[in-house]
Length: 127
Image (tube, rainbow, N blue to C red; front, top):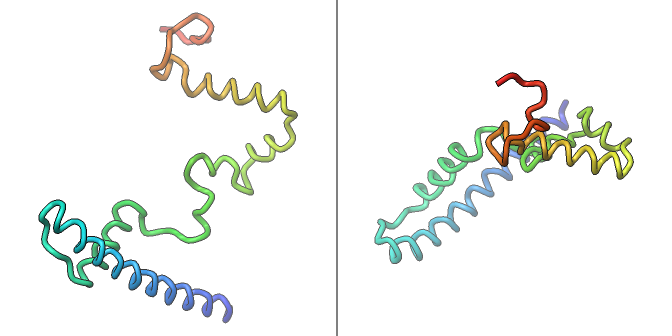
């Protein structure tokens, strides 16, 4: 319990230090580039840190950290407690190839707006 508190406290300190360093970098880059290229006003240090925080809220959400590292670009399919990952690990190369072909067909079939509609990919659906 005590170690968890220490790690969280250290993590908050590291995060604040990163915002301080990146805030200075954003300020320097903004003032060097954006004012000359687009004729925008210069930023002070607090405005650049605020811009970083706004970007994080808009594009990164409030979460973060190591527990989210498996997400994105299909990483959630192979998370450690995922049944699909367990199934994938027990498949042979031929089964994996067949699975991927079926998955690509399922995801990019004409029923989803791609390609040509045929009887084979309509399945048992009534139209």
